[in-house]
Length: 121
Image 1 (cartoon, rainbow, N blue to C red):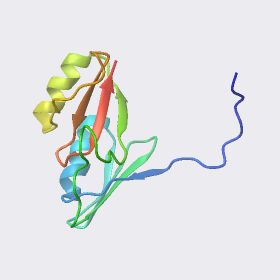
Image 2 (cartoon, rainbow, N blue to C red; image 1 turned 90 degrees about the vertical axis):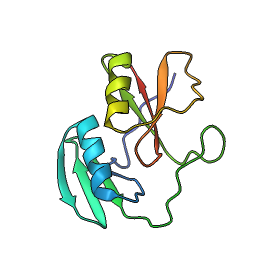
Image 3 (cartoon, helix red, strand yellow; image 1 turned 30 degrees about the vertical axis):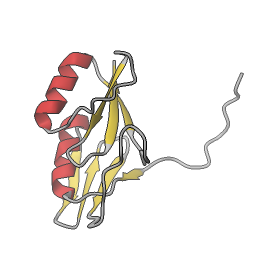
Image 4 (spheres, rainbow, N blue to C red; image 1 turned 60 degrees about the vertical axis):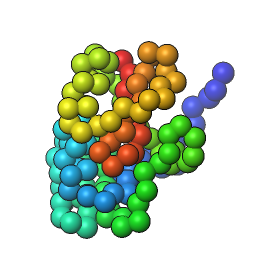
């Protein structure tokens, strides 16, 4: 059994490299809710009320390879209805890679710039 220990730190912001910061902040605002607190060509930030996502412009950004290669970092998102959420996210501009290791328990998607995230109910 693992014992809880006092936290040394708290996550306040997850920084996601981006080619189009404003568009990425809007995509994730639609997915996670919250308020865009800054948005221009070089940087955008989204406050979800629990944490922030920050999107600095990164000219040499390359999407992670899937499967294989380096995945960098990804988000796991809980949804009420897996099929409905997948459809809505695809309509928002997400893509669905061919390789799906979840066996139907979760779905791997990529945001409009190729950052991977998973949805599960």
